[in-house]
Amino acid sequence: MVYQMIAVLILIMFYSVYFSKFFSQRKQGIQTNLLGKGKEGFVKVIEITLKIVTLIVPVVELISIISTTHIDLTWLRVVGGILGILGVAVFTVSVLTMRDSWRAGVPKDEKTELVTSGIYAFSRNPAFLGFDLIYLSILFMFFNWGLFAITLLAVVMLHLQIVNVEEAFLVNAFGKDYLKYRKKVCRYIGRKI
Image (cartoon, rainbow, N blue to C red):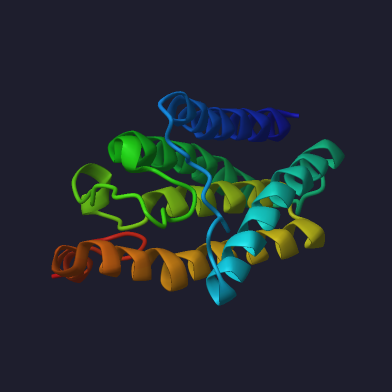
């Protein structure tokens, strides 16, 4: 029961931050959910698949939490709880640091700011890292093969979004500034020497 409460609390905090930002930007006339909109080819496939997968993940997570499936390894469940709290913190800080430049997907015609300070000085993709930590958290606490499959697919799709969509957009939008930043900061965590 303790792990169920922790997992539900993690999901509530995570999605509260996500939807608060989404609705806050909507009030300002900023379109936040850009996944698949105005895209073509492989980029559209990645973004639409990512959108579908990220809608399915919380459903499978909640089913897993309710059914209390898990591997009977207390240390793994504790690690899951820690990863979840860390994931919420990383995601929250990344969204706050991005201010109004934060989007789900890349803007086709909008100009956003290249954010390289705060948490972005240690990770080029902390919001994605936050998602991954949350997904792994629930997986570790309530392991089952269905949850494993959807978690793996979500993590792979987030990575493909970064590598094939986000980074290409940032190179195109910010050129040398982004390339210089990319040389200093790792994709997920760490600074390069």
